[in-house]
Length: 178
Image (cartoon, rainbow, N blue to C red; front, side):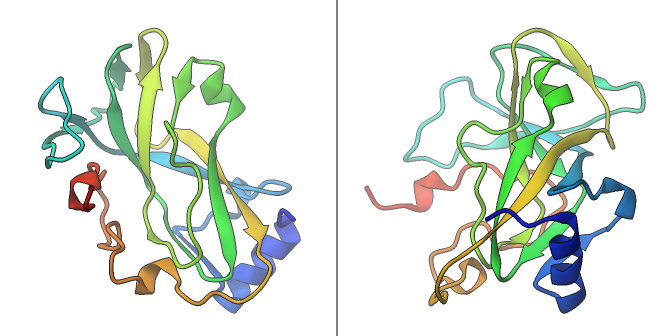
């Protein structure tokens, strides 16, 4: 079941959901709009290796915007820091972003109960498009869960994305054993 605007507000008041900064005008009927930070990154090498630490090069979106190019994976990050202690958060692109040909995540749209951080975005586009820091980029949708949680994300020993950051985080696949 998806939380309504009233249920999201109740969860925020209880501390079950944290959104910083919170702006009431970003609360939709059953979602919360998040915004693109000025920090982005691209991988330094064109060929990525899942078993190696692929380094990134940081970018800062200037006031006049930044033009995304097709064929490049950009890592962006939300301005908003979030915590979710009782619900499963899903991040989806806004329809207005999709209509510009921008995807904000390749596969990682679902968070875990216990996720506490900004959201790294895996941004790609189908044609050149200018983006701006602070623009609405996605929406968080919160689902209820059934049953108790034994191992929330922020308590897992092998969790790879728990260090609080305001910048995008590269893939940590290389930390897995395979």
